[in-house]
Image (cartoon, rainbow, N blue to C red):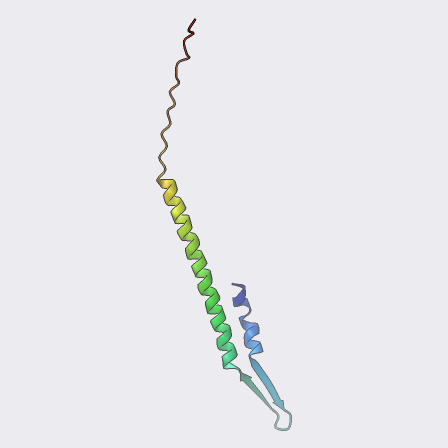
Length: 86
């Protein structure tokens, strides 16, 4: 998710600003390939994060299923003390 925070900086790096003082004009150009690359990287990171969450929930679900299927038989009766054989 930290990659999403980098989007504004990447967009800023993908633009170029040219000033022409003779015409009193400023031209701003965006490198669309750079923007597409950044957005693709963000999309890939999001997919990986979703996959990691999905895998974690699958593992947790399997662990919960194992706990649900445990059967414990507990005998709390106490055996009488052994008789002295003398």
